[in-house]
Image 1: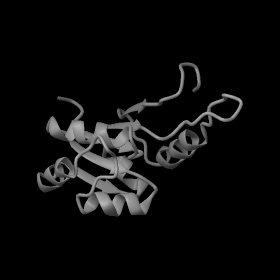
Image 2: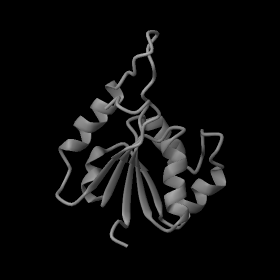
Image 3: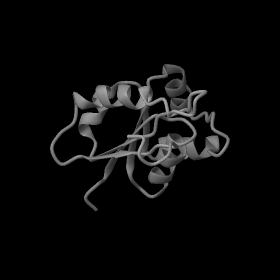
Length: 128
C-alpha cells in the first residue's frame, strides 16, 4: 500500500466521515481543520457530525489512527491530501470557492513531490 498516511483538510460533514472511514481501514489519518474548537472536540473524542458516532472517533484516537490538528504543517508528512472544505452556492447559484482557495494556499507551502492531492467537493463538476 503506497498511501499509508492520509491528510484530510476540513473536518465537516464530508471530511470527518471520510477521515474516520480511512482510519477504520487502518490508515493513519491526520485531520486538519482551521477551527480550533472542532479540533479540540475531536481530540476529546467528541463528534459534532450526526453521521459519525463519538465512539468511532474515540476508537480511532485510541488506536492512534486519527489525529486532529489545526496546523497545516502536518500536510508535509502525508502521502495523500484530500481537501474537503465547503463550497456553498451564492444567491445567484455560483459556487463560493474561497475556502478551497484558502486551503490550497495553506497546504501549498508544505507539498512535496509524490503526494497525491484530491479535491473532494460537494459542488458541481467544472467548478474548479
